[in-house]
Image (cartoon, rainbow, N blue to C red; front, side, top):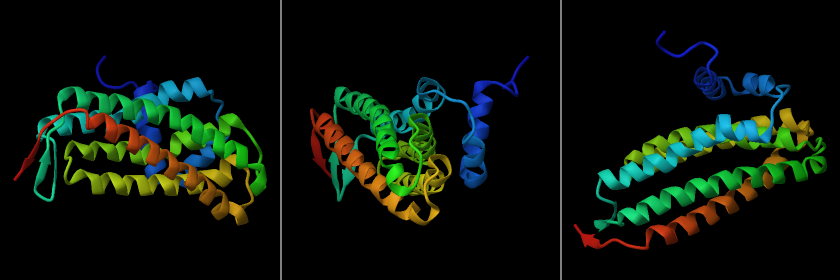
Length: 208
């Protein structure tokens, strides 16, 4: 028998991704009562999807001869490119869990209910759009903007998921979202800082 089986894990991921992107509110309602574990969400969702931007950036840098900004081309070494991919991927996996801790910790301050697994659902599923848009990093110069649009949509998913899964006060959703957004910005700065150091380990700079 060929093709993807209707109940296969791959089919479930594809269906869930499409539903999240096209019908986020209804999908969060479906996610809310689902039994889940942190380990299961990592294996079935975070690990495969978070690999998309790391792998795409690796292939893009290797295929298009590095990074070019204002006529200055930087060609990192293969070791630096590989280190960048591995480091960004590992930090992303860690940061998802840390984000879940923040979501869980502040839930009661915004009229919600603390639940580590519900918080991890929010952190894991809200990253979907950003991770998928990471495929545009195959084009190092032009793909960054499209990847950024995916990140913005992930913020929208987060905004939709917080009050539903954490039972927070709808009137305080914007405040809850703002606190979580601060954590996301700090996470992005740390990942960017570390990976920029890794990728600067080697490679010539050329003009033109």
